Image 1 (cartoon, one colour):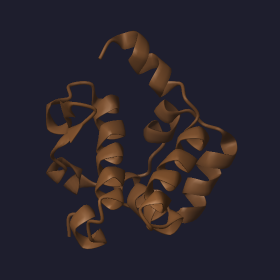
Image 2 (cartoon, rainbow, N blue to C red; image 1 turned 120 degrees about the vertical axis):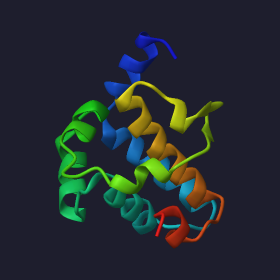
Image 3 (cartoon, one colour; image 1 turned 90 degrees about the vertical axis):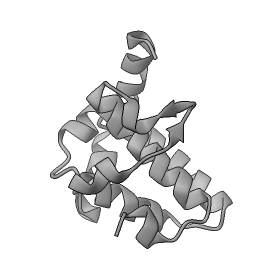
Image 4 (cartoon, rainbow, N blue to C red; image 1 turned 135 degrees about the vertical axis):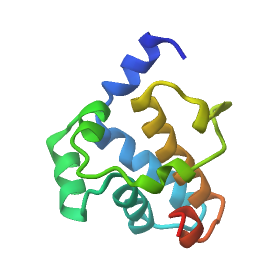
Length: 119
Protein backbone atom coordinates (compact mmCIF):
# COMPACT_ATOMS: atom_id res chain seq x y z
CA UNK A 1 0.00 0.00 0.00
CA UNK A 2 1.40 3.41 -0.86
CA UNK A 3 1.94 6.29 1.53
CA UNK A 4 -0.84 8.39 0.04
CA UNK A 5 -3.54 5.82 0.82
CA UNK A 6 -1.94 5.18 4.24
CA UNK A 7 -2.14 8.91 5.00
CA UNK A 8 -5.79 8.93 3.93
CA UNK A 9 -6.60 6.07 6.32
CA UNK A 10 -4.59 7.58 9.18
CA UNK A 11 -6.45 10.87 8.76
CA UNK A 12 -9.93 9.30 8.91
CA UNK A 13 -11.90 10.03 12.05
CA UNK A 14 -12.10 6.96 14.25
CA UNK A 15 -15.69 8.04 14.94
CA UNK A 16 -16.38 7.34 11.26
CA UNK A 17 -14.87 3.86 11.38
CA UNK A 18 -16.49 2.68 14.60
CA UNK A 19 -20.06 2.48 13.19
CA UNK A 20 -18.72 0.53 10.18
CA UNK A 21 -17.19 -2.05 12.51
CA UNK A 22 -20.48 -2.22 14.45
CA UNK A 23 -22.55 -2.60 11.25
CA UNK A 24 -20.30 -5.41 10.04
CA UNK A 25 -20.73 -7.22 13.37
CA UNK A 26 -24.48 -6.61 13.63
CA UNK A 27 -25.07 -8.00 10.12
CA UNK A 28 -23.79 -11.28 11.56
CA UNK A 29 -25.85 -11.07 14.77
CA UNK A 30 -22.98 -9.79 16.90
CA UNK A 31 -23.19 -6.67 19.07
CA UNK A 32 -21.67 -3.21 19.49
CA UNK A 33 -20.64 -4.30 22.98
CA UNK A 34 -18.56 -7.11 21.45
CA UNK A 35 -16.96 -4.68 18.98
CA UNK A 36 -16.09 -2.32 21.84
CA UNK A 37 -14.74 -5.20 23.92
CA UNK A 38 -12.38 -6.11 21.05
CA UNK A 39 -11.25 -2.49 20.59
CA UNK A 40 -10.64 -2.12 24.33
CA UNK A 41 -8.75 -5.44 24.47
CA UNK A 42 -6.49 -4.38 21.60
CA UNK A 43 -5.82 -0.79 22.68
CA UNK A 44 -6.16 -0.73 26.46
CA UNK A 45 -8.91 1.90 26.39
CA UNK A 46 -11.73 1.41 28.85
CA UNK A 47 -15.29 2.05 27.63
CA UNK A 48 -15.22 5.68 28.81
CA UNK A 49 -11.87 6.29 27.10
CA UNK A 50 -13.13 4.74 23.88
CA UNK A 51 -16.26 6.89 23.92
CA UNK A 52 -14.14 9.98 24.64
CA UNK A 53 -11.94 9.25 21.60
CA UNK A 54 -15.06 8.94 19.45
CA UNK A 55 -16.60 12.15 20.81
CA UNK A 56 -13.36 14.10 20.34
CA UNK A 57 -13.35 13.16 16.66
CA UNK A 58 -9.74 12.01 16.79
CA UNK A 59 -8.26 10.56 13.64
CA UNK A 60 -7.09 6.95 13.45
CA UNK A 61 -3.45 7.91 13.93
CA UNK A 62 -4.25 9.85 17.13
CA UNK A 63 -6.58 7.10 18.35
CA UNK A 64 -3.78 4.53 18.20
CA UNK A 65 -1.08 6.97 19.40
CA UNK A 66 -3.11 7.74 22.53
CA UNK A 67 -4.01 4.10 23.22
CA UNK A 68 -3.22 3.43 26.89
CA UNK A 69 -1.62 0.00 26.39
CA UNK A 70 -1.57 -2.00 23.17
CA UNK A 71 -2.21 -5.63 24.07
CA UNK A 72 1.03 -7.66 24.02
CA UNK A 73 -0.92 -10.68 22.72
CA UNK A 74 -1.78 -8.83 19.49
CA UNK A 75 1.32 -10.46 17.97
CA UNK A 76 -0.73 -13.70 18.06
CA UNK A 77 -3.12 -12.23 15.47
CA UNK A 78 -2.36 -13.89 12.15
CA UNK A 79 -4.09 -14.03 8.81
CA UNK A 80 -5.05 -12.01 5.77
CA UNK A 81 -6.90 -8.70 5.60
CA UNK A 82 -7.41 -6.97 2.25
CA UNK A 83 -5.13 -9.55 0.63
CA UNK A 84 -2.20 -8.80 2.95
CA UNK A 85 -0.91 -10.96 5.82
CA UNK A 86 -1.22 -8.84 8.98
CA UNK A 87 1.94 -10.32 10.48
CA UNK A 88 3.96 -9.15 7.42
CA UNK A 89 2.88 -5.48 7.45
CA UNK A 90 5.95 -3.33 8.05
CA UNK A 91 4.30 0.02 8.85
CA UNK A 92 3.56 -0.21 12.61
CA UNK A 93 0.43 1.96 12.52
CA UNK A 94 -1.02 0.15 9.51
CA UNK A 95 -0.34 -3.14 11.27
CA UNK A 96 -2.33 -1.97 14.33
CA UNK A 97 -5.23 -0.92 12.07
CA UNK A 98 -5.19 -4.27 10.27
CA UNK A 99 -5.03 -6.16 13.58
CA UNK A 100 -8.29 -4.44 14.50
CA UNK A 101 -9.78 -5.19 11.07
CA UNK A 102 -8.81 -8.86 11.46
CA UNK A 103 -10.41 -9.11 14.92
CA UNK A 104 -13.65 -7.57 13.65
CA UNK A 105 -13.59 -10.00 10.69
CA UNK A 106 -13.25 -12.90 13.14
CA UNK A 107 -16.19 -11.56 15.17
CA UNK A 108 -18.33 -11.29 12.02
CA UNK A 109 -17.35 -14.85 11.06
CA UNK A 110 -18.81 -16.14 14.32
CA UNK A 111 -15.66 -16.93 16.27
CA UNK A 112 -16.02 -17.15 20.04
CA UNK A 113 -14.76 -14.11 22.00
CA UNK A 114 -12.16 -16.21 23.89
CA UNK A 115 -10.56 -17.15 20.55
CA UNK A 116 -10.78 -13.61 19.17
CA UNK A 117 -9.17 -12.20 22.33
CA UNK A 118 -6.42 -14.87 22.19
CA UNK A 119 -7.25 -16.19 25.66
